[in-house]
Length: 192
Image 1 (cartoon, rainbow, N blue to C red):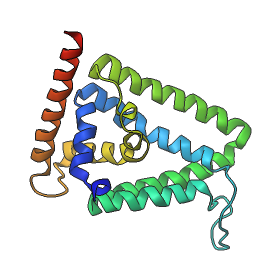
Image 2 (cartoon, rainbow, N blue to C red; image 1 turned 180 degrees about the vertical axis):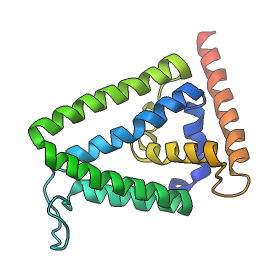
Image 3 (cartoon, rainbow, N blue to C red; image 1 turned 180 degrees about the horizontal axis):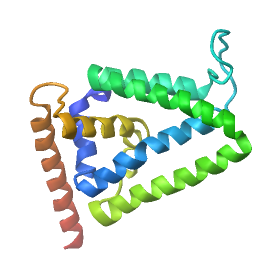
Image 4 (tube, one colour; image 1 turned 90 degrees about the horizontal axis):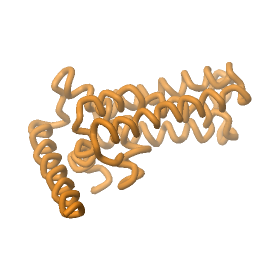
């Protein structure tokens, strides 16, 4: 059940994203990273063919990664996860049309530029504002699988007060505060 422990994962994420400017940077840059990754995955070989889909929608690694992400998000939390799954599929469809329009020779350049720009922004957010290394150095799953869901959950919490269950925000805040304190104590011991 550890993989589906939303409280544990969101607390881990929150401990690395407590500075409001860093959070805003992630809200702006995480989804473009996913979108552009889907653009480049458009060019992977077709794994399954269905005649009723428009030819631009290719059932390849990009599609199956999208399905995996969507199902995982819904397993974490049915409401926010379903909304995030919808956004993930919307990005897959939109990225397929963009990739098809650009063609591979231009698409990989656009993807490279966007990925470098967005990842650089996030590293700046961590280095300048959070003053803590990104979570990807401690947990790659957080960076590549859970980040899109967590920024959506962050927006839902701050804009409409959404909680997956009563007391979620309070319990996560307690864990975040504890994790940050442990990290600060460890950092202080290193410098002593």
